[in-house]
Image (cartoon, rainbow, N blue to C red; front, side):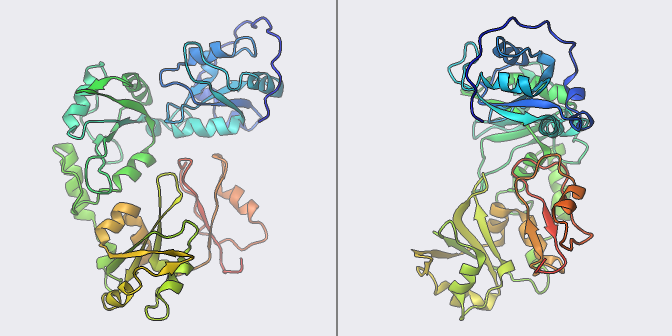
Length: 415
């Protein structure tokens, strides 16, 4: 957003009546055309009062109109009265908070976007979602009791019982190599307790200082999806965590062990970033016929291709496929290795292979939609695709994190 020329300082208007954040960012109120400004790059210890003081001289902002996301990007939203105040607020773009050595970026936003952000952190009517915090920078030897003691030192109590979804209260995900990731997720009883827990940010555990910030249930589940119960790399817990793991192990059914499913996994490394599934079909043809829906292109943590892929094959196809090692795909030679279902799940999650068990797994009648507003509904998607035949089973996940992308299923490939 172009930055308007700074205006002359004007006297600060008298503070308006404080409106609770949860109410001020409700979806219903957003529908009438509320205005907001998005902030990015805030220091970890910034408060709503700091942000209100930041705008002095440009626009009158109360602390109650500030929504702090407490995420890695240092984001926040500020509600303002009208479009004029949005432009006045934007004059503070790339300026510094008092006492900070980093400038903040400002962007024009809306009440709807702010409402969606509030829902994601549990301040817009979905309290459970805002009860999760994430810790980063833990010692490799950290255990669940260490995490509980870390918060107890700050007077914050971690619940003993499992949260309402049946998962563990304290989760210590492993990395792709099956080793401690240095991160943890903790589910608190209420969003207010989670906010108090964020006050432990930059406190020390052993000889390391720890990042503590808000997270979502989706982030926690995605991180824990890297640890498959019963396979190498799954963490062993104790108490409630051990019970949760035992239940998950009993319920876990390897999709690739089902009758008729390809059971051998081949890993490719060094692919060009713009490679697609059809390029790998061409690589193995004609000796090894590979179906596109049995090819999984891996991505990094922010959704970009990382040059790796996994291919599911029947046992008898493996040796012939390995003869393609060091051959080229779009000008780059690629490495081929034998892999395993465990490595596939650790990289992509069990859901990747589980989808193959569905009757329409081979269907090419789905499209992916990216960049949707957070307030998007199934009705909005149907209106967007007006003129195409969208199946009645069109699905939209519950409020996803920004990286998630809903899918819409069409009736015919031409649609």
